[in-house]
Length: 429
Image 1: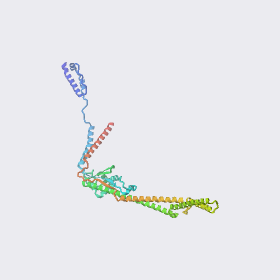
Image 2: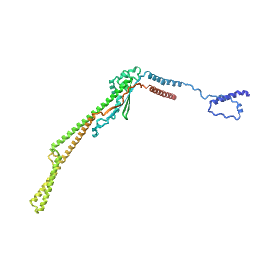
Image 3: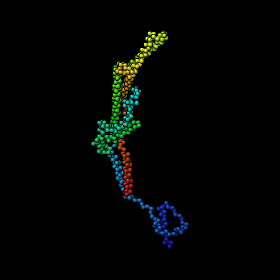
Image 4: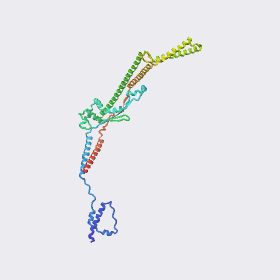
């Protein structure tokens, strides 16, 4: 009986050993109190078969995995290989010439700058010249000027047969040339300090250097044109102000002359001083007559004395004349078209003020014209070159490694996003 159960016990022990090996995390069984009894206890075969079950099946590739692999090859590997093959097999070398410059203003001051700060109206400010120059370098105006110097289409379209991506089409229009120009001329502009850095690309070093030199020359021409325009505008405005001030001064002087002709008074102030002198003389005569009358009154007691009567009459006449003179100052017509002295003086003073204002305006306009003429004789703005056009010795473009790396990154991102979107939509369905 014991011999018949021996294989079953051995088979059960082997099953328990296999289960313990497949489940290492499970707790170890407690040792039996009686090892001999435990070894002799039979294990049912059904329990051994139920206990010996694998936890998971071996991993196998599914159809969706093959789909992801195929899509990765189609969307990432194939385009990347095509890009690398084109970059290293067909893309032509491009040479870069560097140049750097900025716009500087004349910081020196002339002797006329102290005349009320009038030099600021002569166009000497160059705060926005850097912005103008930055836009000019990438504009169609510069491309048109350079086209007159060299054949840009022929140069950039030469390798089109082997490199149609980085080259220009031979039958390109002027607009296509301007668009391609913005690709081969790279401008860096720092608004804080006004520094402009250029990187000009061409298919040979000499052309790149020639283009950079031509751009620098055209930029200097633009600055000279801005200077000439500013000087012309300043001279024109100053001359216009001077002409207007001269007309105003002539009108003021003519009005004053007409007033003197009509009133027949050269200087009303002098005439008034003369009349005031007459009044002062009458006041003195009145005082003397009063003193004489007082002396006569003390020396004679007869009021009908002819001398006393004559003194009284003299006093009355002088007082009447003083009263009449004072009345003439305020209301009486002085024979100048019905004008009294207050109205006459008010009109004369108004004409004097107009003439003085016209004279001051004429002096200021004349000073501004002198300042504009002085500033027009010097260069207020100029192009300061801090990096001369370089002659490249080796090709730096196209940057094949950078383009290949960017292509790999963007292709991988596009593939991953497409896969996530596809499986999220499929799982929802």
